[in-house]
Length: 299
Ligand code: CP
Image (cartoon, rainbow, N blue to C red; front, side, top):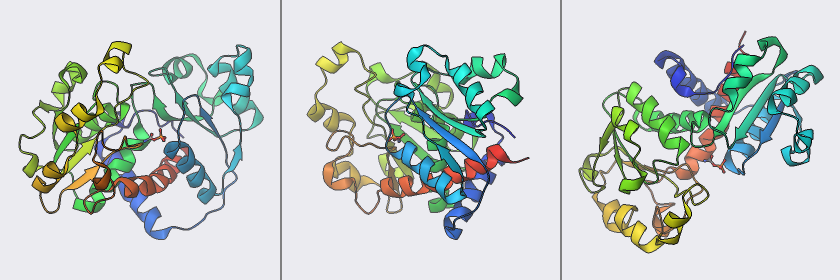
């Protein structure tokens, strides 16, 4: 039994095993039975992660305990740690948590007896990590190319506020992908240089296997950045326009973790274009999350 908090703390062989297991679960697409109980604690809004974890839990036959953090005893001051211990005492096996705080799980794990807390799954922590999104992204890439080594992936946009960018840059680099980044200079985290080069968006765009666009995270940018932000300018400088789309290789794919700001990161008419895998990413999320739930409960 283990937690699933940061995909980059797994070995490459465990990651590939999870990717292949997700694809097998997708091909099988069947419902299972289980005596496990799960709680989904989302302190930040979500559509895809929340509903696809729920769908994964349903398909695995888990019982779900529904708690709305806003209406729980945490609103009276109970800590997340005490809440998780309470839920374990009540009989919860797995807690899936999305939280605004980076690495929300570190103190909880270091300060508690592992027997007294549920298995934890990180559904996104602040601008830290989004490991289940990374797994579904890896599944989407692997389904397309059947390997990672030597692929060229360009990650484009709001790099500094994106937990998807942080999770993916590191794991893709570890798997032998040639990662590069494009986006506004003030949103280029210096530590990303260890995973790949920063380049102009149009540099070798025609050589990329995957172009992965990121949402502009208006809820995390400063007021000044927000005030001077122009959707039209951003789209022209860093977005997927029709002319950029036409330069892509025949077998290149377009990805985005979504939600997409249409006509900002990607031109409206290209969101569902033939190279786009955006809705397939969402579908893959169900099977990747089934694989994660099985992984954390493996004896
Ligand atoms: N990609 C993603 O995490 O989407 P949600 O915020 O809707 O879960």
